[in-house]
Image: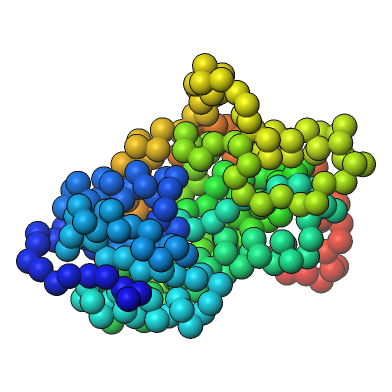
Length: 303
């Protein structure tokens, strides 16, 4: 049985639908929602991933497997959730993964796959929700992006590219659906004390040419992380990660408590500083191009 939901009488505050609901930031959000008395529809690729939560929270929890790379499966699952739950107030698009390595090291298949989940999976789910949201008179989409959606570094080019694309697509979507009382917020977290560095994500096939370069060193850190480290070293490392998942979850949940949520929120001082630095650098580079830009206008151009 793919879907599990037992109809019962419960006190309903809001109903959420969450993709990529296993682990990380989503775990903190789900815990807060269930403790608040909200209903939560949780999805992941793994069948029965939330059986323990189902036993504990019963009617508050609806669960389903979901393959974000399969458009038909996305539509079936979303339609089933609305059919079973009646109304869903919030879509939290959380599913994503990291891809690390030099551009040259990453295969074409890996490039396609990271966009398949991080961008297209999010868009498929949002598109499946829009007819339902219009029918019920509104709704809210919270799209988890990343501070990496505003800058790029060696070894993170393709991951950042997928997140930059998320930023652009959902910024446009927010304007397109505003007339239907559908609100969109993009969330840009920094580092989070959850699945920290240590082999998480996907990696390209290493080339020796990058071994002693900044790219190779960053990839080493992302791939090997704290393998073999003592608990003291792990605890020390965790203190270098800014984001508290519980505090971040609280801010995400609070987005549903206002009629005018912002287009973006940035979570973590590291995210603020890196995004700020990137934007300032780009503004300076743009200013330096001003004279050149003006010089290429047609003589009869009317402003």
